[in-house]
Length: 129
Image (cartoon, rainbow, N blue to C red):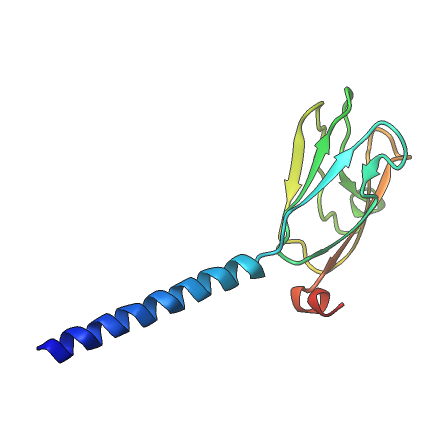
């Protein structure tokens, strides 16, 4: 009986260690979120060129006093439209995630001079570079 108790205690300790290692791995493996600020002056989107990995949540925050949008160029060229925020008011945020790998040129539909590029890389590819 004493031997059984000792084996169960060792097994519980091993399971606890495995759970802690998995939690640490999952925390490290999750890509960080990216925040892009919409500003009044050039480059308007900061950062203008953003490289992320798959699974990252991207948020654009409108820090200006006027309406803006985040519109993928494909939405206005007849190609596949990957995202379009519609109007984003002052102090509002637009977020997306789970974009497939690729290069996404985007602009503000209210102010076409405002342009940015979002590059999404596979998670394992980005970690090698």
